[in-house]
Length: 174
Image (cartoon, rainbow, N blue to C red):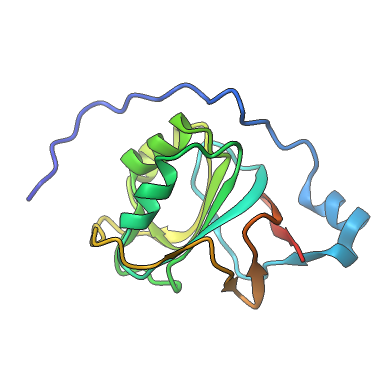
């Protein structure tokens, strides 16, 4: 079934989302012993390259039902880290889910997997990092786990810890 496409309406930036004011390189110079750096290279695909906030997580494989649920709740400036096991077989985030994240005050999304609707997502005031894109949609069976420790490239993301992302990469509190 083909989803009818309408013109993308860009939601206003939620008032609780602040713009990141320190570069990850400078932050690492200041606090390196307290931080882990993700060595895996992610693409910057959102309208904001630099973003940070408290970590929230979803672990799922080719099913974005929980991602949609979480991003439709108040984000309060948090960053959702999605562990899709690095799969590029289907997208875990599209333009509608990303627009919901903006409306609900999320600072960003880090996807260890694929997104879709790259052009529309690039126009949103949202940080989005992912491994790539695929137009294929995911299942919506709500299979996965929310707010659990996830490990990406030997770095553990713990809900509540702080994450920073910019063009240089991703840092997270230990």
